[in-house]
Amino acid sequence: MKRSLVEEFENDIENALENLDYEIPFDIDSYITTDPYTDSKVGVVEVEFDYDEMDDCVPDSWDEDVEDAIDEAMNEWEGNYSWEDNKIICTIWSDDDDDDDDDE
Image 1 (cartoon, rainbow, N blue to C red):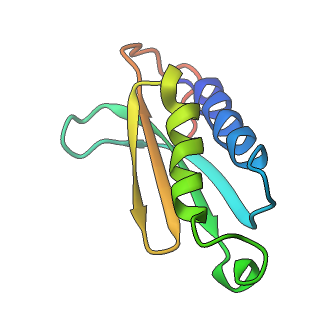
Image 2: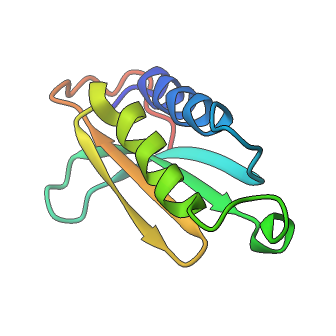
């Protein structure tokens, strides 16, 4: 997994969230790790939402809006996402075994 791919994926996710009709407070981070099931390198983008900051500024449907934005951003990527507490964790994989830009 190339670091440049993970950075591009992070940018796609960040842009999708910034294009919502309202501002939502979040922090975003990305990294490369090894999938424990396949032993291959995967790219991960974690988006952490600040529930305290969003209480008054986002609609009740914010989580559905976020999922729609993530779905749209992931159209071009092979991967999936899941919720974990106040984070949405997006994972991509690539058939490219080139680890030249690997940065764990």
